[in-house]
Image (cartoon, rainbow, N blue to C red; front, side, top):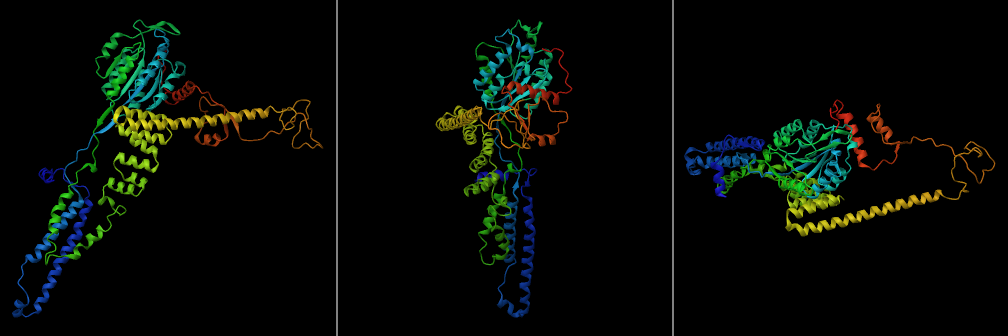
Length: 583
């Protein structure tokens, strides 16, 4: 302790010296008022001595010293000043802040141009690329993955997610026909990559899957790596001899080896040759996994300064030990201090004066006020635990995701399981086992519970679907009742007697077809529009949305992506020119 005090006192940087709570220095004003009152009061006590005759004064009073009054007053001023300065929080150096660990990502950019339909690689370049995406994810690069499709325009398919099954599902549905603009537009792709990777601080990877790269496109890739912390992994899907592009038999698509040689000089670009087995994508996944964790220096703020106010407590306490000597007691001067200390709890007006944020959060957590505790904690892990106990599992999962350790992954899996996101939870438990084998039992038990909960949820869903289908069959069966049912609705025939609510008859027919009145309603059947109407406005959409009954849409993800891409082209790529080469 004393060595630490010595280091702090001898290493004061006066240029960095400041007070963390400068408003506490206003307490010197009441201190000055108290000193003035003490001095005036001491002079008033001396006036009554003049009433005594001078010849008797030496017998009535003992000869005192000026220091008998000045010393206690001086030490009172020093002790009070130390306390006030300590409350103000003197600081002149920053405490060491551990680096923040953040996780890298991988963005898969898949070429969907017509040249990818060439069959020099069986079954085709595009189909082999989709197989390689599946093999790459099976190799578990451990990074969150995103997916972008590009041809004449570039479109994000999936944001960054740790659910590899979802990426595989969408990648399998990518075909050339969903692209609204044919050709290859590398500048638009790089703009899209830059916008998606701009918010990623950790050095990450762009996995480019294409068949050929021109010299101009290679220059764009090199420029991207020079102005970014990210790397580019290239996997080419073409043979040295190339192949004819379907629909353009006179055009041979192949890679120029000179361009590859020039790109290989950039250390941030890695070109992996295509192999028949999984060794190519497994090598890429291994390189990404090694660069997964990146430590970034945290931005320091006022909370990172080392508060040295506790050093001033030492002289204040030393002086207080002599305060009970005869003639040194100034009881009423400490009354304001005692009153201020009487309300130093967590629920006081200024709890930050007395307790740190984490200590306040711990007190609220001890009282089972978990929401209040989460609002007060500064530490992300304590805040995440408080949110979990409060039932806010989504916030807890987001905070646990900031912890790249095995414990953080396991805790995130528990929070995801509580929300019913069992697939993501199982991925998190598996990740925890990979990071720390010592957590294998804990993570394995949690993984088993998540699997059981998922099976239970799937079984309930299956039962509900079975009951719905059974109900549908019952309804269909009711429609197949006896044709003589008088309540059965039929369209009016020429020979049938048409009846309405206004028709007056003595006796309704017991058998035969009858027509019912048409019900007037505001319900309309509609198909999903390929594009918004010209007179479309948000207000109009709100008014009509509840009155439209959509028919069942196609379950093909490719059709959905095709429509989405068309809308994006009309919104974001209005002035984009089609490439000169449509392949």
